[in-house]
Length: 150
Image (cartoon, rainbow, N blue to C red):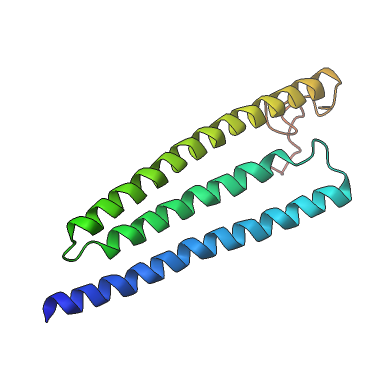
């Protein structure tokens, strides 16, 4: 009786968690598609925008975590050896996918950071910072404060 109740509760929670994982993928894909089309229309360079893959990759990695959690919940109450084996295979596959996805996200993030640093260097070299701070201080740091406005 109690085992049936726990199994039913675990199945219901697993279905909810699985739904969250699916919703994350759906929203991420819709947002990425909209961002992609917007980049096409605006002729963004570089195309596709660097943040597009990073955002989608992070969402997919998060979704994989939710889906793995749902699989664990499904086998949490009185698992058979068959269910344990299936969970182990699913966990191994999803963990490998997540590992390689996280590695690619980290590599892309390093590339975006390098591009940002290069753009800042070019802006500094061209004199884009005209407030006297040269990018290192706060805006207006080279001007004295007005009386009564401290």
